[in-house]
Length: 294
Image (cartoon, rainbow, N blue to C red; front, side):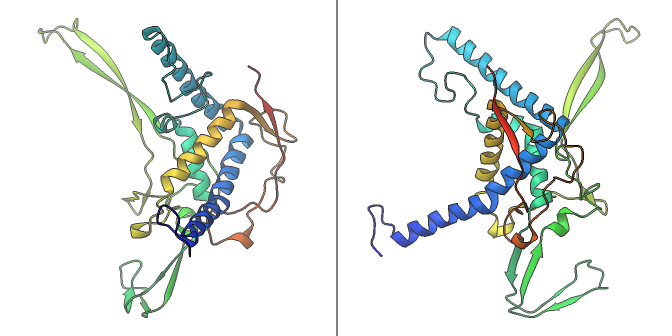
């Protein structure tokens, strides 16, 4: 192999390109497909995600106006272009909780990866830790874990076979408390009602124990996918930009974010492609996309 100027080899470069290509075809593209499909299919999901994206854009524009008032020019700004909404920061993407939930739910429903390990020593596997169903695993045995067994566990997820775009969205809880500012304990004149909104993330449990990571789409331990954050933000940003720039609907539906008369046109999983990455659809879906009117 010939070394390049940075000390790498053509073989190393080729492996890197192949890795990125594999990740894109095997994960990014089908994950975008399923996330976008279910958003467009569901009128409520389409509306809510549009609203939260527009809320972020509105905040960006207000911030830009504020900066313009304080400075003669904002040409040094590197976070937005002229229309103020072609780029999203990671913090802004984190504010789009329904979009993030829709993406996470797509991973839960459609991840089809096997995680393969090889036993380095003989050991006894007792999954329930009750001694009722022990398995002797011999050194050299290859063990394959299929994450769908976790993601479709009805003890963890209600109706696990059903895609719910808001399954992982936090709940806003309003708490009202009474604050007494008066020194006179017998008087209610100083009472003040304080209303606080608290963001409560969803909690998933099994057998009374909380599951810290209910969706295992990126592996774990020392083999945790190093590109997990990149692909997550990449897909969310791409879908957010599509929603920003285009009106979309399934061909055959009457409006954007509307379901067809039946689910016969919903694509099935191509099980021939199972085992590596996100599941691929068995057929294409026709979507009508129009540039939004300014």
